[in-house]
Image 1: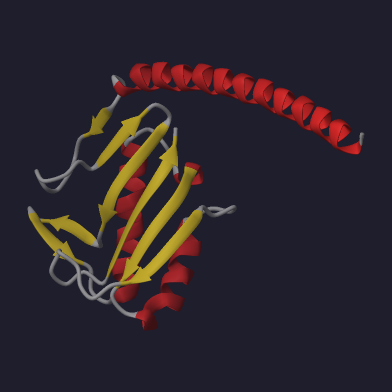
Image 2 (image 1 turned 180 degrees about the horizontal axis):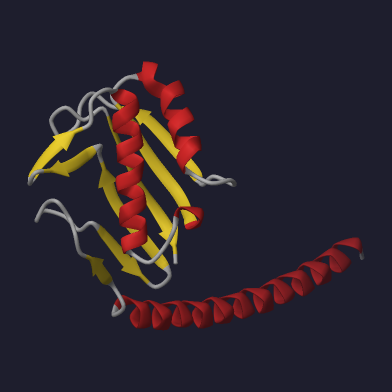
Length: 167
């Protein structure tokens, strides 16, 4: 008798589980079709932000309400030439000002930055970088990753920062 009751309970459970699985599958299919429809609608709204210092990449790319800003370094243009700021603190400040200019060129602002990825050549500069970073970014500051790298593509660079922001 006990085995018969357990068997009945198992059947009921499996039947119920099957119904849940079918419902979950239907919901997933609906969500997937909505996501694909959204992807197709936003895919056509990709916008390249002009002003890249190189033809190899875009300054920033806007898609929907997100902006992906390319890595910036501490270069300024003086008398038609690119000049790297002297010393780490000056480079860090100029790097973040260049990042801010790219964010603003895309129609956003530093208070809408969601995530920064920061690259330092020397770990010893981490404390100074934090001080400069906190003087530029308003509170609450964005999520951030900071890594130390061996070198940069741009000669003389000591720091590079990219970000993702909302519009």
